[in-house]
Length: 71
Image (tube, rainbow, N blue to C red; front, top):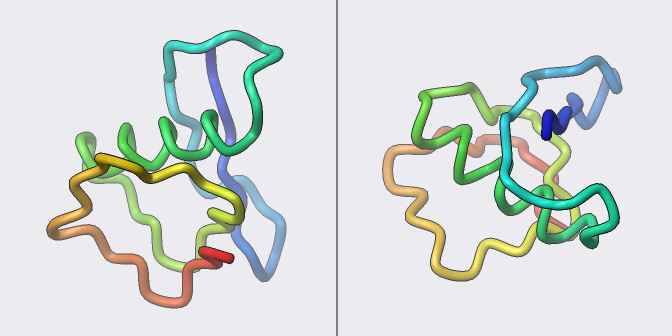
């Protein structure tokens, strides 16, 4: 499925990830999978709204998370 990550300040879609999950999966799983997809594909995560992301086991080495919302 396609999952949109928006800019935390403007609410504009920052990137759209192609993730393998169900529509009814919890947001934390969807955001976590989108972040992993973003890192693998080189998407820009700067200023992204990643609130509630489940990043367990995610390798974020080299990811630009400057000003990203990780609450």
